[in-house]
Length: 425
Ligand SMILES: Cc1ncc(COP(=O)(O)O)c(C=O)c1O
Image 1: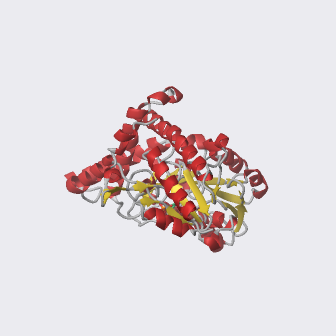
Image 2: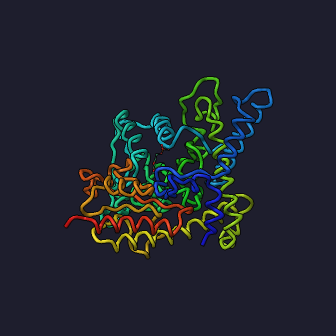
Image 3: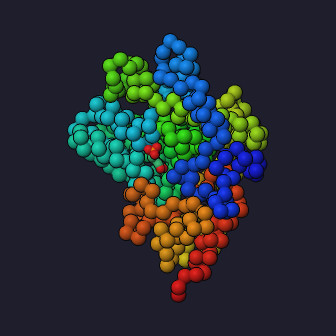
C-alpha cells in the first residue's frame, strides 16, 4: 500500500473542492493531474530562466541547461542509451506524423506496414497516411473481442519480406490491455522490419525499459504521466542518425536537434523534468520494497524503477476493486481482461457499458457528482468498432492511477450502482 495522503498532498489539484465537494479524477487516461514538482519547475523556468536557447547570456545558457537536463531525465525514465535518443515535440500525435514522413523517405510502393485494431488513432492514422502517399499496403493485426487482447499469434502471417514497420501500442487507452512488446519486437526484427511503440498509456503505470523491449521508436506524452502537455519520442541513436529530418537549414544536423523543429516549449521541458523529479521522490519514499528487484541499476534509474514498481503493485489492487465491483452491478458489461489471473496484462483503465443508459448519460450522471470519467471511443476508433459499440456511444471509461484511493473507487461504484437501481424496468 502506498502512503496515499503523502502522495496526494503532492498534487495541488487533488485537494480542490467545488461547492464543498471533492473531485474524483478518473479521467486519467485522457490526462493526469500535475505534481507539485512540475508546477515548481515550470514556474521557476518562466520567472527566472525564460529565453531562447543557444545564446551567449545567462538566461539562454540556463535554458540550454534545462533542455539538456530534460533529455537526461527522460533517458533515465525510459532507459534510453543516451540523452540524444530523446526527442521533444508538441505531443505524441505530431511527433508520430513527423517521424512517419521521415521513415517513409526510404519506403517504396508495394512495401508493407502493420497496424492494430487496438491502438489509439495516433498510432494508426500517421501510418495510413504515409501508406497512401507511397502506395504501400497496410495490414491489420486484429483484436480478440472476448478479452480485447491482440491476436499476436496472427502477427507471423502478416509479416513478409516487404514489411517495413509494425506500429503497436504498449497499453490500450480504451480497455487497458498491455501488449507483449518484447515478444512482438523479436518477431518484427526477425522479419527485418522496425517496431514503433505507442507508450502513451503505459509510462504512468510501471517501469519502461526501451532497451529491454527491443523497440526501435517509442512515443509518449508527459501530460499522461503527471507532467505538462509535452510529447516525447525515443529512437535508437543509429536509426535517428540515419533518418532524414524535415528541418530548417541552420538547425543541428544531429539527433535530437534535427528532429526538434523550431523553438521548443522550454517551460514544457522544465515540467517534464519536474515529472521525473516526482517519480524519483516517489521512488525514494515508496520504492524500498522493490529495491532488490532492481539491484543491478544505479542512481536515478534505480530510484525511478522502484517508484514505478510500487505504483504498478498498488494499481493492481485498484483494478481488482474496480473490475470486481463493476461486475457485481446488474446490467454492467466490462470490456477487456476481467480474469484476475491476467491482471499483469492490463492497467487500471476499465471501460464498461450499463444497460438502459448511453455512455454519455452515465458520464453525465457521474459528472454531476463531481466524478470525472470519459465516454465515447477516446480516438480508439477501431476497437470500439470491433466491439460493435460505435453506434451506441462507445463505453464509459474509468481510468485509475496511483493517486486514486479505494474510497474514490467505492464512490464511483456506488454511483453506478445507484444508476442501475434507478433504471426503468
Ligand atoms: C494510447 C494513446 N496514444 C496516443 C495518444 C495521443 O497523444 P497526444 O495527445 O500526445 O498526441 C493518446 C491520447 O489520448 C493515447 O491515449
